[in-house]
Length: 112
Image (cartoon, rainbow, N blue to C red; front, side, top):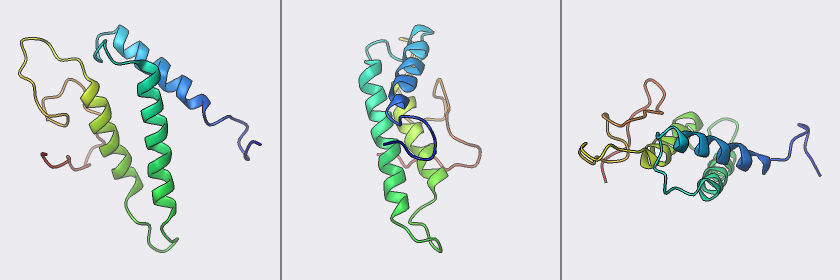
């Protein structure tokens, strides 16, 4: 059964996999990343975050959903970024990352 929007939510995995393939083809992501596996991680994590956020109340959500999504994307996508062999390897959320998916004003994740 479909909801009020006429889409199959799992079709997002195809969209995610296509985006990962295209980025890998352009050399922006590591070639070894399996696009279908990455799509499953993206899909599951997005809906997991949304589920956790929905457990809050209308008056007080449990966390800022936009910040949580941006931090999630920072960890996942910057972790998949291709790095040149001569560049120093840095943490997944380093300021010098090849791609920066954080929204302006979104705080970086703390170093592990």
